[in-house]
Length: 336
Image (cartoon, rainbow, N blue to C red; front, side):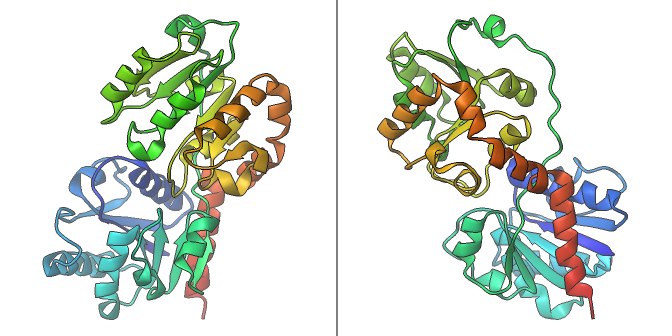
C-alpha cells in the first residue's frame, strides 16, 4: 500500500524519532512510504522514503499550510495518510474532503483539544491513558516500539568517579520541568547511592546549583547528552522516572527491553505495565524516597517484580510489534 506520514512539528525529540523509525520499518515491510514534514526532518530520512517539504512554522490555522499539505497528499497518491500528533491531525481534517486516502491520527501526549481525532477514520493513542483521554469509539492503543537496544561494556564507576560499593541508578530525559528531575534530587537526597542524570535542557544550571547544596552521601552526576544511553542504562542497577507528566515514555521501553528494574511516578506508560508497588504519586518525593530506599536494598527482589512487564515489552514495545499493529489498523481501513 501507499502510506503517507504527516508530521508538522519542529525539533528532534521523541515524536520525530517515532515517525522516522516507523517510516523506515513500514518500508522494510514492503510498502511505499512518503513523509510530509519540515525540510530539516526530511534530511534525516533514507533516500528510499520520499519526502515532501512544508513550512511547519506556519500555524495550523494558516490556509497556505493546508494547501501545501493537500498538494502533497495528492502527489503521494496515498492509500493511507497518518497524521502524527495534534497539529498534523488538525490540518489533515481541513483537507479530509479533498482527497481519497483513509485517515489515521496518533495522539502522543495529553492535550486539551482532541476533537479532531474523532473526525478521522481511525485514531491511535500511544497508551491506554491517552486512549481514555480521547474518549472516542474509533480509537485504539498501540504502544510506541523501539529497536532492540545495542549496548557496549562500560565501567560507569571509573568513568564518573562513583563509589562501586553503592547501588547506581540513572534517570534519562530532557532537563525540563515536566521530567521532574528537581523532585528526583529531593527524593534521593541523603540516600547512599549513585545517581546519573542523562540529558540536556534548560534546567541544567539550576540542577547543578541544587546538587551543590545537597548531601554528599548521595553521589550525583549530570552527564549531559550521551549517544550511548543504552550502554549507560545497562550498566546501572535500575532506572528512575520522576516525571510530572508523560504521553509515552521511551525510557520505560528501553529499560524493560534491557531488563532493568524501574521505579516511576504515576505516568504513562509505566503506570500501565509496572507492578503497583513500583508506582508512586506524582510529585510525592517522600513516597518516592521510601520506595527507592527499600528497593535499593533488594535489587534481586525488585528485578523479580519486573518480570511481567519485561515480557509485555518483548511482545508489545518492539519496533516490529508497533509496525505490525499499525499495519493491521491500515489494512482494516482498506478492507471492503
